[in-house]
Image: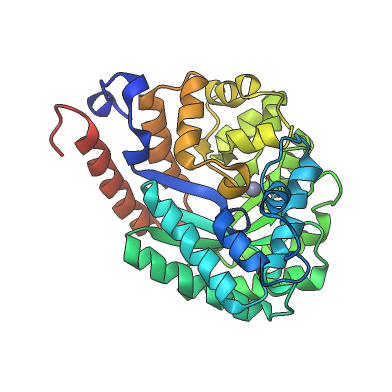
Length: 354
Ligand code: HPA
Ligand code: ZN
């Protein structure tokens, strides 16, 4: 953000909820409202016996700061999808939630397998339900939504390969990228290299969860072998000056999710998060929420957390405008988004007509 658009309001009084936002790392899997989870859990005999607070402890952050334990939430969440309407409802509400906090552009990621496996749905059907429901909600609420399909590291090659095929088939419906997620400590990325290389050749954006619970070496692998344009988390890059230089040189952005990193135990506390060091090293960063309903946060909360880490309002608006450059949109669509956001941000700054 340049001098002219720097806001002059006292930072503690900034109503961040109203600010226009860009969200590039949000899992549909982790965007399920608890009330909706409860509603659908009643319909599944495997979950129906659970008391409400027990279900809550199984699908939301429960105070245990451990990476594998955090990922364990998704094994329970998978079991909610006993009917197509459960899938559609979750997709619709995720977009509604984004609209409620003024996210103007959302890249929503999901694994078709996550929503298909419990009931034995076809992954392609599931993808079409999600795309249709989310696109309708996006239209109704004025959010621009695109999608990334997620491959989890524990998937077999055939499942991963089918997910790539679905991504390529549904590009007209807004799929713009491919994501690798899951436990980097237990599952190597190597089996998926050829799929990610192909996805990139086909023009999909590539983002890889790496250097979260793992190390800078996982980030090197993501950029050198899988062709990542962006890195999910990537915070361990802070340990490797050569890598920081490379991320800067190649303009590869880190999708930083502050609360998620504390809850998975990969940083000891918010105060010790390496975000300020990453910004100091001038590495491209986008601020994201990861799994808002598992973590019980919004992207707005993460803006306040960033403020606590010493970022200014000016820095946060700058990060928002930077995020536009790291979306997986084509150049002409980036230009339109950039103009709309800049105008809206300018209109929020006292004394500056939009
Ligand atoms: N890391 C890896 N996989 C994930 C995460 C995460 O933080 N959230 C959802 N899937
Ligand atoms: Zn993630």
